[in-house]
Length: 260
Image (cartoon, rainbow, N blue to C red):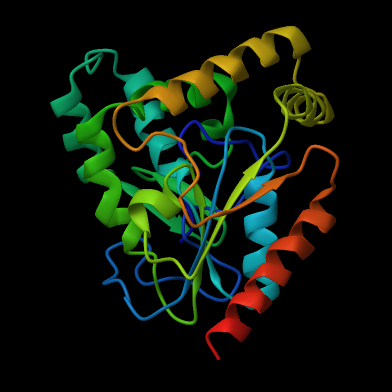
């Protein structure tokens, strides 16, 4: 199982094509995410804005440690996909929360199936990301997904990435990282990723949409995008994934030495 941060990044720019919870170590519990969380399993929480590189870094940290991986935004993207397909849901927060609770999703083998349909690629579209960002401000929807995200906490450990992993979902995480970069650098990353996939994109439009998402995420009343008080903030503007990965792994080594 593996899940993407709300309004999350598409694979290649800020995430791998894994599903929410399926980490490199093994499948976490049942494919329908009905696992009972293991409160003793350590967690590394990596939060940050869109296209900050957190998905790529988090997935590599999980692979390096042999831990499970949670890309939380895939859950919000799945709700967004169903919302766009059923316009009757609209702004009905109660209906959307009910949908989130009974989300007919299965995460297995790096693929995501929704009601039997493979939607691994479909949920990475830009319109789905924008809709997921809109839905993520709704308190009932966020609350409905809290326990589903916590169910991914399994031995030997979990690397969880999103926007509120260290502040709300796993406030007791052993290591909290807030990964950021300039808006211009993040827009350029997203532009390159889309172009590499053969998808038409406009850099100015991407930058405008990214700033809109940033503002919406940072100002929402429930679980706003802010660093946890005890988080290590890393600015990846001038760094590649490998350099950022090493900084996170070194922080984890330092954390383990402190608690040895």
